[in-house]
Image 1 (spheres, protein in one colour):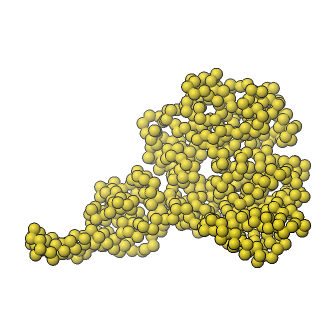
Image 2 (spheres, helix red, strand yellow):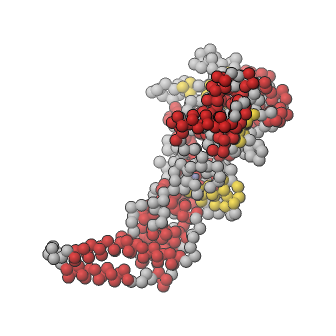
Image 3 (spheres, helix red, strand yellow):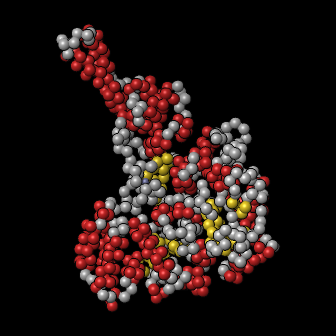
Length: 617
Ligand code: ZN
């Protein structure tokens, strides 16, 4: 593995603004000198995730996660340290320097990084084919403009591409760039026989004769493609009959974790502009083309909880616009309980049977004006569900009503708050034309039987509560002193014997290590501690301590109190043991009372000694 120079890491942390990095994932608002938003690491409704751009640290007061810009990228993108630094370097145009030699060889570069690069090159390649003066290019442009009714400008904006029926151009480009064998085998763009050497002939393109839509992750990196079948799709394409073929899952692409167009839509949502969830990428592109910039689409599969959590990071309001056909309605009904559980506020556009419509067709014909009309007639989550399970309550039999109410009660049980559940019950009762009190007692009975009645609401519970066990140890107080009053580190190191410190937990281990640095005059300064931090737990702890402003004015007093506690903790057990031995002396003559007495008075003297930090500072 290539090792990045510590100076380079330091430089990167100084140059990259933490707020810029976090705000790609979390919508931040000003809160004094700091910024605040919904925590990306746990599910919450009121922001407890704080970012201090000046110090370069973040901390969540809900779940306790804390760290710097590198930790943030590692945790939100599941990257290793090196990969995270490389990713930041690439994003902010900072050249990454490595220990020894000029940099990592192709083999040493991280696999994910290579697969990202391969996808950028592939997107460019397919786009050039789309624009080229070849039969494939001409066919696809014509298909785009005439059959799909999109503009050439939109194709440029989203880098729409074309895969020719026969083309080894992409393989040639990638082989020339000397990507690793692993990356070429795992990028998902080719079929390669196991054991075959990688050559132009053995890299068989997965996508042929198809319109290529690049799929970007929420940061805008191309990670996959969706390929639309056309008349050029050859007869020997293994997926000939499939209208849409997606990239397989790869180290950079998990279908259920990604929403098409989220990278753009997330900057357009908020302030009365909810997400618009549509079924397909072309629907989302249609929305974009008429100026509705907030549309997102799942990856050709049913929507997942992960995708909904991702949405909620940016905006909790979602308008669902699925096709008016029965498949679309079923998808909407499957989606609804998940959305309620995720705490999303959902409305349905064109959801009622009488306004059946398809987003692509509708927006193409009427433009953005159609959206406003749809919104005016949109249905709340419960109204939509009621219409779906019982379209005509006025003429329904009591048997039909009771079946419908069971379905609705199950749905209502998914909602994440008591308030929402109560509102839903009232709404459902009105629609079913029954007394709300009757439905409420049904609800109670239903959930008393249901095993899920015991379930905790999914609300604001942090996923991992901050560990309270070590939060008030003397070691922690002394660490706080060392980090916020660095001039006290050296004097502390001279008066605090190392064996008083309990190094069995992170705070103690760190205090030991920090004091050793102070003692040898090699303390790197609190902004450059990376080299001293060995585990993620230590990094999180230091970030958390640096983030907090000390709750005391007099560090000397706090340090002396910490010293006193450590001394008592270290010496008193021995003192008690000596007293026990002295008391048992008659029975057990092996102990030497004279030396025991001497040791006792020595310990008592130590315990009485004033703790002299005042003079030292
Ligand atoms: Zn949190």
